[in-house]
Length: 343
Image (tube, one colour):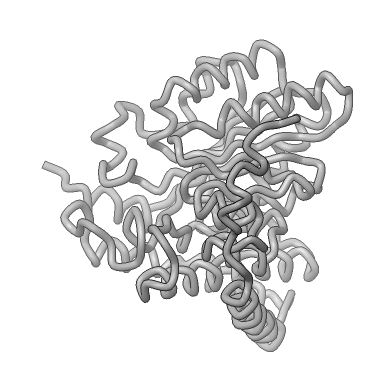
């Protein structure tokens, strides 16, 4: 019998052999790196704050999957719209969300993106096309398809991307949204972040298919599988789908094979029986940030000093933003009815 660990480690180490995507220019490489480091350091700090009891509730951390959000978002404009998941901080940060408002929201303060009322799973910023995270599995998929429908109705060339996990591809909302997108040829790119687990359930135990991308055929849309630990490859795959959508080619599905380093929620986690530390370490050997840094330096596109400067700048931003959030006031109970109804 093949164990979950054997299956998952194989996914980390035995990838299809194909030529790597060409290395983009320096500006693109540094942009990808900055997006990933911003996600990594935000999530690392947020996890520490949660475990230290300084943040209310719990968090679903994105650490390990940074290449997917960074690579996908590097193709988008502010008027392109995305919908996110319960593991949504990475998408918001990669789309351009600011640390100050992000941390303030996690602290439940009025300077947060949702004025302290939304919390971790509902952060949104319409000014950058972030339609919001969603605590309902698969709940963001039809929202993005609605945004794509609106774009086509307006006649502009904006694109929508719903992010979702492998487990969400089993939800009716995915199939209904994909069917509608295919019929109406909407400018939407479905991006599946396949991290191998639907919460604690390995993919082989909740899907008969090996690849989520195979489901695109049912809706007559093209699909592509990419290495979700390689930001350059993700950028290229999503970029092809975005270009197709902008030019009226309709929807696509991109499946990124990736991995989350922490448990389903939090840092310490709730259960350790569904995967082993050996499995986690095997995936960490292909850490997306380290891979990008090593390749860029070896090919002479960027330097270690440039990458070190990005780490330092992001760390300084983290410190300042946490202090800002901690000094932000709590919502006034007298304002409880504000923003509940539209008038």
